[in-house]
Length: 181
Image (tube, rainbow, N blue to C red; front, side, top):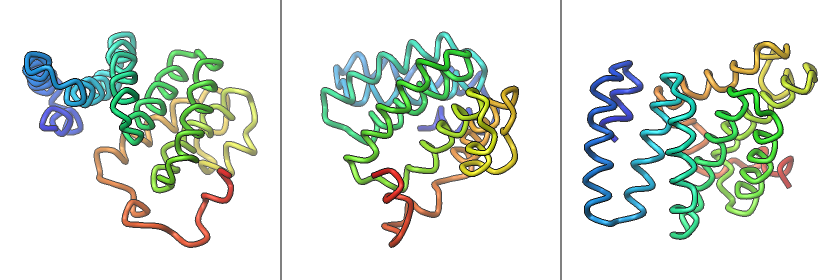
């Protein structure tokens, strides 16, 4: 977690060192869930740095670990991260597939407080498909043109570094869950 915080603060050299060290220790201990968490954190920091290929490899390695442990939340976060990364790599079809899988996990898990992050990916996909009206409804006027697909991902990184969404506090009656169903 220290590595992720350091990455959010822009100290990428120290973040990388700490994350590599933590991941090596987790692998040595053989705790695959902790390894998955380290891979997710390291993948997020590398994505923020623009090292997309390396980030993708780490996130893809983490995904089956979370699935095998039944950790739906971390699986959901990893799906959405991979979807945003695919969008940044201009792989719109893969991003759409990952978004569908992530939204299904979201729907069945009841973790609607994570919906804003998932909808950022959907907004980015709408922008990629040239649908500015749908993008604007989900994300506001920023990120509405096809060339602004990175807007939703950048906003997600800003939110990650500034803390959990207010909706994470608990269920929101009449919230957006109905739209996911």
